[in-house]
Length: 310
Ligand code: RRO
Image (tube, rainbow, N blue to C red):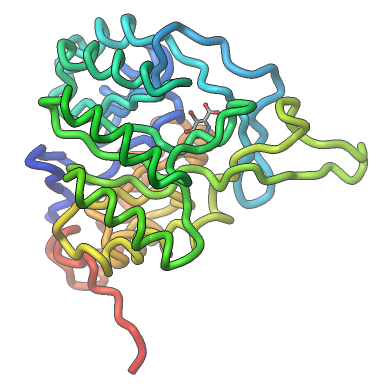
């Protein structure tokens, strides 16, 4: 039997496959469904101090090759998740809390609430593209360092960051320098490709309502951007800081590609929303078949093994 397990920041995952924050993980019912499914972990929706309805509908649309969203951080709020997280432990798989905020102080308040709730890991979301007037923190390296320094003083739980896609090696190096100075436990790359625009030519209209139609792009069409970001950080860090790859995973071979590039685990967003939690069973089967065919005994045996041309 092929071993699909992984370890991130000392936390063991039965399978290196889980939901991306945002995908079917807002409510108690959704989180419990992830607990019962063949997902290797439960990742919560990014949370803010108060419960939020999020942006007006329509705010998520599946398109050819992916999805566009501008959900606007709909979530139950820190206190509700702090109460839920200990209950989710009964599923005997890691619980990852995704922490967000509209202001730096929000993050610090959330860190204190999570400290008590005790998730296995915290993923600090530095890359929500969909709050009008609030830029993605991860594109501001100074702001990122300032925020993470303050969080580090509060957290005793290992924490990592969810980053936006970067498109230039200089930016990979600069953010990597910041994250090394902070000593983050892991990085998750990438969040959706922010502020893209999908047009319906028949209606001569945008396809989502918030922000004039601008939203985060996910799904198969962003896989090359995701793989490039996983690879760029692997080339900087090797196995020093574990990378969770996310973006464009639809089948077992996509997971294999992420791990070849250097991911220690993989998250799924769009395909989970489209297919439901049964997707984890299919993906684990396809991944096992792929590794068997390739002769790898385990998922981690192929991590980072991507070859470059002479
Ligand atoms: O809720 C959202 O609109 C959202 C978030 Br917080 C995020 O991090 N990424 C995304 O594509 N949507």
